[in-house]
Image (cartoon, rainbow over all chains, first blue to last red; front, side, top):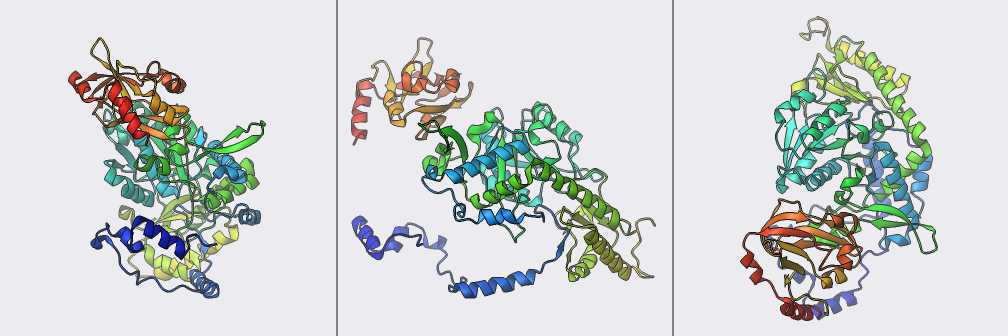
Length: 466
Length: 131
């Protein structure tokens, strides 16, 4: 189907009507210096056969390594029915169609998604999704600034235990809007944000506090104390939470005495396969009192004139096609297809199934840590409880360990040294429900061999017990 | 337009302003504006104590059709907001010039009201906008 429905004749007629020579003339007000000119780096088009072959070849270079890496995207089992149903013609569109109410099935699905997300987060309302977890946090920060009308400072406290990519994305989006992101350091023993470390902000005007739980290190934060502290300062709480973890952990809506005000995060763990950079999707939920400030769309259930159930887009009046520059965001339902997959995933697993997945992830990660730390050169980095990933400290150069493990077709984890150089040789590891005891055994065997090859007599590296 | 009270002043952005005996000024949107917008579903009020600047947005009226800014007709400090609109925004439709008022401000300079249109000028203005 052609997406530009105008024929050459249509275009000529329109140009003649407005007195323009050609389409280029319409862009003449954009200064030459701002235009990128020829897109010389973009190759010519390819046939379907050619593009298939290219993609297959590229996919093969990735291999299918045994994955012990998390750090924001997680390797979960996805029941075959999820994508079988998601790719049916009735659902197979990225967007909510225009004249949305004509697509009652799509709207009902989004309504069910919202219902499930409010159930997981224990908050009152959910939007229809956002681009990804990182931009969801940026949107949540913008929302908090709009919503907290008692605060004038536009200052947001962001612990460094929040995913480094999320912090970077948020900074990119909010930096030019007069919003100040203040980083809060973590405790080097616990890997968490210590509530007492916020004390010196007391009495200051703070718009919101972000808490990721479990945090980027996989560690559980003291969410009750942090939430109550923020609320006493008149700040809103923005929770960043992995949806799988919400099946086990206390949901954001129940943190502290009054609960988090906004919850957001990455929806990928709910039925979306790992891929280089996505597409994934973000979610966002909030308290009823803030509903007018939530970005994006909300689908509501109503009845038609014959009293039959029907679904409709609500709060659309705040979007960019109506509010222009005053819109609460430019987000609609771009990630609709992934939301479809997530909704089917959650429907198939149910609350009990999701909790079993979460428990299995937790147990496997504990088993992995136990097994790997049997080696004298490896020890847990932090002493606080984790959910389904945690950091390990190596007493020898990490890069030298990881390279041979890659060669064994194994993704050993996420090297923390780039984002947290102060941690030294620190590796973030994760074992989801898809990792078996044999997988963990295999990882430990490879690791032990690699380490012993590098620590032969005379090696200056000292084991941790020395 | 039949319903344009003569004791009020009007802005080009369709707000009305009433000078009260105590020197404060009550602000709402005109009957013509509410008619254009349709059924109100939400009014986002300013905060009491907030400083507002003439011709800058300080409230939002949201109808089934659109969300529109409400601009301060003159500069001043908001001294009271119509909290009743939180639960019954339809009051703006029912009584735009009365119970549907949005906020009351203490003007920085009452003389600023002279810069606004009177009822006759506003009626003429509406006639030009109708084209």
